[in-house]
Image (tube, rainbow, N blue to C red):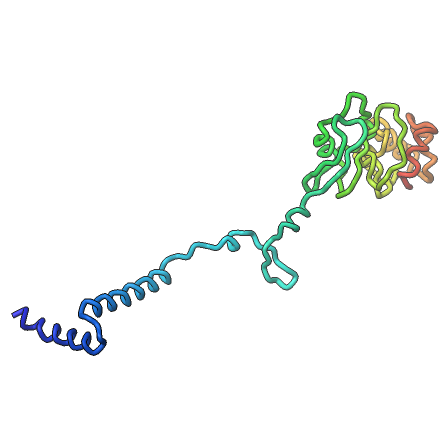
Length: 220
């Protein structure tokens, strides 16, 4: 009974194969190849896609709001180069991370030499690309700075106002430690605001030499 039902189908397949000029097995192979290709296409669409390398990189928004991939140039620009000189163990040019401070530059130069004058440094001063950090030795005269921000950041761009500066701001000045900074604030409390920079001579611990050193760096 089953064989009788299959005979018309077999004859139909033989007829199609004859018309196409192939054997019945060639026709079956062709149908199988088409089915395999269709299944492969369906599987590719249904399977989750592996993200491309570009998709894994963090994007950077451009001015137009279109994400742009970071470049090697932009990544390199995130470092700063400084020249550490003077009383350090290994003076020279060092590469630091953005936001680095003077103490980071000194660490990169293997630390202070034994004769370094720490009191004339502002270790917390921020650094800029291309800056020279000069560390003086004890008793060494300060040379003419090559760039703004030399002397370990003790030469500040903005003048320190003697009438508004707190202890921390005053201690950024060269040769001004906690005791002299406190004396300056004590003078303000006793005599009122400074009317001129030269009034620093009335502060205990400040003489002519220190006034000459501080005068270009302060204001009233």
